Image (cartoon, rainbow, N blue to C red; front, side, top):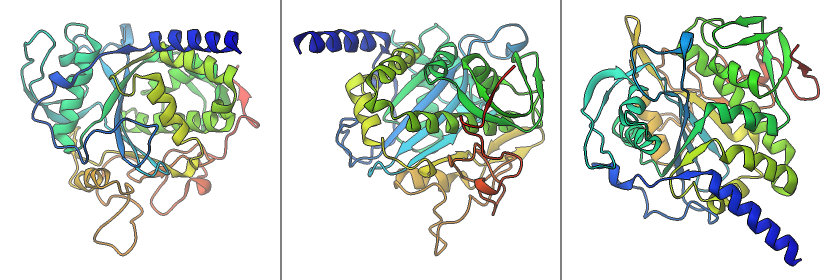
Length: 376
């Protein structure tokens, strides 16, 4: 028993050491008020939690974004965990969304300059101009809070190279492709059908943009949401919390790819939060892309986005409409290709047309590990 306890303690210490934890409280000023006094982020439920998850992708060659110098935030998702731990809402913020970026504080006491009418992902680049991930995250959080009025409890920055290791630790993830994809830029070469993706191909699928859909960032967000939904389903099906070897393997992979704030960066907190949502129904995980409007070939925040932010602040479902007798199917205004809030149901589809459920989606039929074929 002593040997087991000592071994577990050493393993836990190793995992905790994988996570780069940095407090950013002093870097964010003029914040909206929190709905409650800050509680510990679990193991005690009863308080809603808002996390900002940022996928950091350093691109080279064909991937390089010549308009932005320094670090790049490629994917940003605002994740709301309900106070009852019975619902998770995920709102993707498009990287190409045109917004105003506030001045951001840096650890050395200096500030970045404010900027108007810039792409959203420039906030991460401006904050991270000196190569510090926590400063990049702080500037992104301040920008999101300024845009939404939603208090962000903590953050996680996921290195995309580590992301593929996490997928491999799960034994791959099933995803349906309606047609063959040959994307040289993303290094994604895959046949149509239900495919079991390894870490490399899952990362390529998350990055792929120009060879699928209409080539827009909004179209790519839909595919990223389908991928994240599939990963969530796999993690829940594997029941990692009761399988210690699998749990350790996954956490060892996951923590190597994370930079986080001091709350969610604590493995005790991380495990406590995971435990509290261990029985959540995958259908209670809802994905939504921030409602937008088009102005020429640029996208700006849509009028109906305010209802989304208000619902998050009030711990209500994303599709709740206070002016209707029952929750609406989706926000009424969005110019994204798929404006509806969608569920991480057994279907891999992360987006459906208004009035059409994921189970009825003909383009993305059910794809599971059992009927998936390896990519050749």
